[in-house]
Length: 258
Length: 89
Image 1 (tube, rainbow over the protein chains, first blue to last red):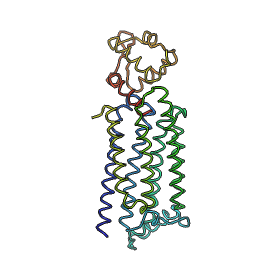
Image 2 (image 1 turned 120 degrees about the horizontal axis):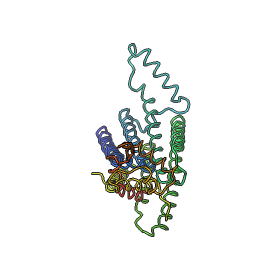
Image 3 (image 1 turned 30 degrees about the vertical axis):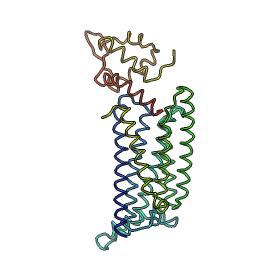
Image 4 (image 1 turned 180 degrees about the vertical axis):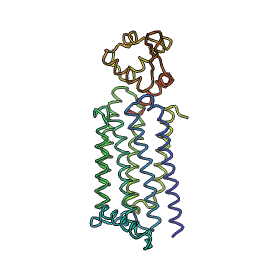
């Protein structure tokens, strides 16, 4: 059992490493184009992948916490409404500063705090990644300015905080599904517009954007409800990695980066 | 003639400087770039701030020339446009 958990955790680490590496390659591969052009679309596109990298970093951290504390899932460690995040932070800091030399505090004391903060950061960064990806395509139509981005940050933070405090996985899944349908609508509208303008049939990028969002939802389900996929988990990882590889290939080819 | 976007206007301005042996006075540059004085000033200040062009004083005359970043912009312009187009940005 322990060996199986170890194997599963190793797979997680490799998977996260691949996705983080791909995201950072996209981020740094487009650095020169952005620095030369200062184009807002390129800026938001790069930010999306930076936030993907951060989200996957905290995702692997969640898996580490679950593995270390031998728990069923992150939400089984995180306490619910009656023990909110703020009171725990205060309590932990009080315990730490006043008694760490006298009392032997077990790492399990910190488990709820670790899990809540990590879950909060994971949800915040993942929502922002999708927001940025959406905004990179829509900024012209929405009279893009950076003030709107602050609203996205606020929105992502409030949702994440609400879900961490309430411990409601379905609410978070619901918000992300809603985001997915917005992406679906935006991508479809852009596809129709481009088809009218160029009469070209080479629009496979839209499919990649959709698949990226779709597999993102599957990754969220995997984090919140770990037993959901069981035998299909490896398939989800391989498919997600393939999409990121295609994205890296396309971006680096077009950006002229080596 | 279709309305030029920001990147096209910048490329036009830089191209004019380059075609004039990388040295041109502000007035002919304004005239050839085919934009209003107000907009030209905005672009000019922006390009100076981003170190894409530089001002050189020579015998009490002011000349404008491209910096290394300016040449790099012209070299990469097509790539930038293709990238924006490909990813619908």
